[in-house]
Figure 1: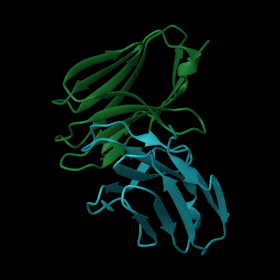
Figure 2: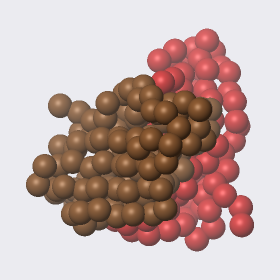
Figure 3: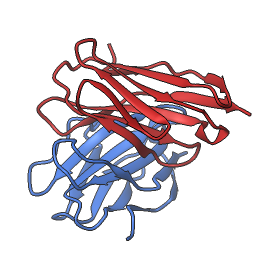
Length: 115
Length: 111
């Protein structure tokens, strides 16, 4: 079956512009994660969605970042008034099981470059 | 103190040798531990997960967990050049679903 997909694969924007990143999880996966990975660094947790529960937003770095998910399907990560330090690869992952008991399947990522 | 710490490397081993990758974590209540492999320019993929103290073997890979020492490791036996990648240790926080990743250890296997 289809894996996790993300769009766009690459995004170049100017400082101060808003961007929207999209993630389509694997069908049936109830959990969805967003991570940020700067060049040469590890994954930085941003936000977690689980079914209809309130999302865990504890990793969002500032109020310029927000994310939504419709039911157990598509999620969008929005970055307002982008800054150069937002440049990174944004990875989305989905998981079938709860409480970290399951494997996270990652999408190919969106490479964001803020000029 | 970082929540999940790994030696950034690079760790260089000859082909056929055992590669040993280490990780420590700060949340004593963590219950789930994962090792992901990430090739350059690609997304992470799961190698192993472990929940109980002791060893867990899967082919050439062995994960070891010591909750008392808050330490988890990954051994790769008979290392191959195709094992050259960054290995990410990931820990689920106690009481929640958040996964914290270490910065990763770069492994080079020399042919």
